[in-house]
Amino acid sequence: MSEPNTPKPFLYVVVCACGIAGDVGKLITAAQERHWDVGIVATAQGLGFLDAEAIQAQTGYPIRSAWRTPGEARPLPPADAIAVAPATFNTINKWAAGISDTLALGILCEAYGMNIPTAVLPYLNSAQAAHPAYHRSLNHLREMGVLIGSYEPHRPKTGGGADRFHWHEALDLLDPHLAPRP
Image 1: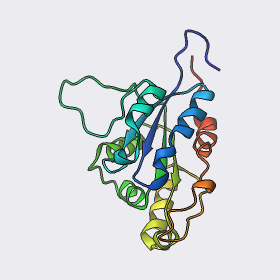
Image 2: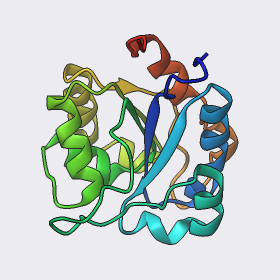
Image 3: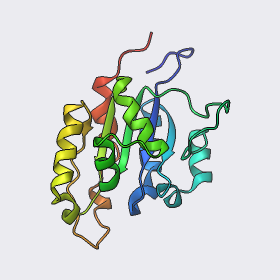
Image 4: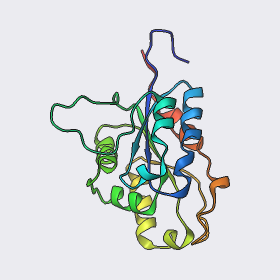
């Protein structure tokens, strides 16, 4: 628990485009209950799945989804940890390959070099999960120290599994990896 004058740790939540993305408020609430401040970084497609006004009201920060222009103020404090939830097949594979063509992927690629603890909660269907690139990507992310959640892929064309997606697992994975604050 933070002392009154000690800043809370700051969590970036990277949100990808999928049906359960609109439930990210569950992770925000869980993080705030654990005394985290939270900022949302959405993929460009993920932004369309979110209620930006509700998220800004809940976090106190705007959702980031695009690069800043030179000289533009940083809308979020630096991250103490990152949770990628929900993480799609596309984001997982591009991240593992070191592709940094969006703000979300740029942040994830830099996190490795900055030693920022990062957890990922995959959300994809079993047909995507069967692709060999996905397994190579997860193994590569593990080798990089990324903490991988336990979600079991849902059946294709069902968009299901929201009841089996455990938002709090990202925090459970990250908590032991955070350095104590002074």
